[in-house]
Amino acid sequence: MDVSIVNKIILFWVIFFITPGPVWVSVMETTRNLSNISIWNFFIKTFLPVNLSVQVTQTVICVMFVDLVSKVFSDVGLWFYVLGGSYILYLSYKVLSSKQSNTNLELSFSNLAMVMILSPKIWLLFPSGAIIATQLEQGIIISSLVFSISMLVVSNLVFVLYVVIGKMGTILLKDNFSYLSFFLLVLFSVFLFTEAINLI
Image (cartoon, rainbow, N blue to C red; front, top):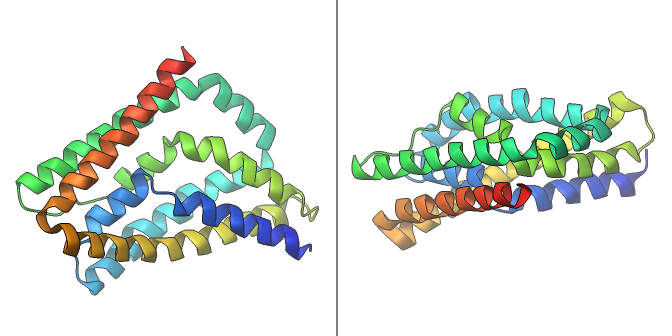
């Protein structure tokens, strides 16, 4: 197995996950006031299961059907932008509602799964990483495993990073962190709606 290609796959995931998006903003908002035990429970009961069931499936689909995924997304991308933007707007409403009721955002399995399933970023960029994975020339199963396992490792490490950023942001911004989360989610939503308009 070509280690330089594995390194490219890992670098792809680092770049993909390090850029803040609605998933990470939601994770920060959900975990920022939680104890370490509660964060661990959220990770085990929500984040990891969504990662295993949704994102691993997305990575395997992208490696196995890279050309088809790219073509299908170019055909129905408008709907991903509209639905993804709408769902992120709904999450921004939930953040603001939780702020007004003095509670944390409760990010459920289904909330997090919907953000990942409807994410145009995933369906646009996963095929790019899948193309790198197919360069391993180890067969579809090994390529899918390398792509998926590296995604799991990197995303779980980045989860820790964003939990720390959320905690630091809460210390710095105090009660205003929820407003920052709300603003960022609205911004992501507006971006997706703008992209949808550009496709028309």
